[in-house]
Amino acid sequence: MASACALEWVPDSLFNTAVTAIVTYYSKHRKELKALPENVQFDIYYKGTLLVCGSVTAIVTYYSKHRKELKALPENVQFDIYYKLYNKGRLCQLGQEFSELDTFAKVLKVNDKRHLLHHCFQALMDHGVHVSSILADTFYRQYTPLLCENTFERERAIQLGFSLGGFLNDAGWIKDSERVFVSCLHLCRMEDNPAGWCRALECCVRLFHVRNVNCTYEAAELSCREAEKIVQQLASCGISVNKATLYAERCALLFAKSQYDEAYKYCCMALHEITYSMSAKAIVDVLRQCSKACVVKREFVKAEVLIRQAVHFAKENFGVQHPKYSDALLDYGFYLLNVDSISAAVHVYQTALDIRQAVFGGNNLHMAIAHEDLAYASYVHEYSSGKFKDARDHAEKAIEIIGHILPEDHLLLSSSKRVKALILEEIAIDTHVKETGDQLLHDAQDLHLQSLALAKKAFGENNVQTAKHYGNLGRLYQSMHRYQEAEEMHLKAIEIKERLLGAEDYEVALSVGHLASLYNYDMEKYEEAEKLYLRSISIGKKLFGDGYSGLEYDYRGLMRLYQNEGDFVSMEKYRQVLQEWSQIRDVHNSKDEKPLDFAPLLKLLDMIQQYFG
Image 1 (cartoon, rainbow, N blue to C red):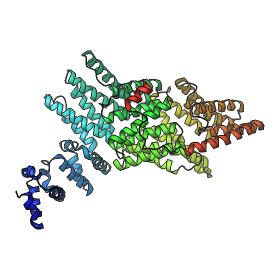
Image 2 (image 1 turned 180 degrees about the horizontal axis):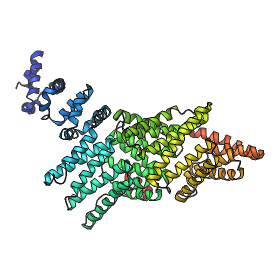
Image 3 (image 1 turned 90 degrees about the horizontal axis):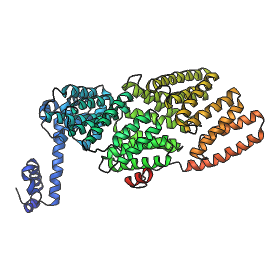
Image 4 (image 1 turned 120 degrees about the vertical axis):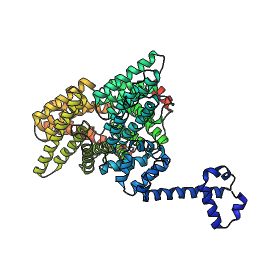
């Protein structure tokens, strides 16, 4: 090898030849390379990059010829070749490679290019290559207890299962992720010792999570019970494990079932288990779920602190274009919507959707959820303006995606159909063509009834989600001039909500206000309507203050009521109250934009100690 000094004086052509030679025999000359001048070292590194890129392009160009040799290349080089196939639109060849579990197992090891893998994977799914189910089926058949009696093979299979199941979950293919984790759990159960129990516990918690996401709550309950049994089994041997993620998933299950008191209890238990030794992903997920539990308990200060921590932690550890950051933003939007910061919620939901579009795109469950959240926030934001086009577009997109991926009776469709029904009802009220309005109301009724049936099937009659659907039907029947049925629906909703949430809950106030509107505008039950309006106002001001957006409709309702009764003194009183409210609301709206670049108020563990100690 030429000396550093000699290389500085050779002609350019010889210099380039020398650099190429060094790159070609890089492993042999790596030590001598360190003694070269910095600019020469840079040229060698740059030349190496060009050679690799050139090799990738050449292999892709002659892919069929070199496919066998491809398997011997390092994982990161293989990935670059596959991504090149994706960029050139050669999805059939890419699908052939990714449908082989051994090949995809290697690709999963390239962690620093995971976002690019999501692009490839989603493109294949959109193209009709069902690579998700192919991989899950292959894993299920290839790694059974009978075929994995060897401890080493079993350990290798479990690790692959965790990696594959986790990726499919992150990519939005929940059912296939569940199948992989079920297979893993069978393998974990084969080892009746503490190490095997720990792996089984981890698998149970992962399975618990995907079943929660998939809304298969009975199966989720089974996973939870098995996980809790393993925790007790380990404790009997003197082994203590961190239970933060288990408690957070238990919180999520109870939250979905509208058992908010119990959900909040497990939220506090999960937070007390958090340590900095947990993965960043686990910490973010625990904080997110606990924030939601605080929101529904109207513990807004605690909820804000938790979700600020989650957003900041996700940003610091994953960056602003990562799915985990968008997850945190969706729950931040949920918080903002519930504290009446509507325009800020719309902005945050749009940002989360944009991130998911960049990462996934296409017909993806994560995209559907983001579309639905933005649809509802946009509906609330534009309620007074009547401009529902964007809200309707997002709701229909959510339904289209979910209907493409999941069975027609899946619970996730219940929420999306409910949102679209609410939007159609408002559009129908504003239309001047009777036939069009009637058809829109009929379509909304069909959607509401479908949503109610799905909710009752999943949760039963005695549930807040079911009560919400009754309330929605009550509003719709009022718009359809079916007043007796509307009253029946509202009374059902109020009875269930009061019994489950208490008389002073926000959900109760919503239903009370809707029944007041029915009595006031359509049934001339003014005395009952007045009491209900005042009750709704009292709860709203207690929870959200004098600038709460929902107060406008109660104040206007009272003004109309007093006008019809000839009580002009009371009518003038509430006209002035409405003016004062409008001024407060203007100030509120001017402060409504919440920043996304905030730092947490306190360090994580300090925050937990202060707010949940």
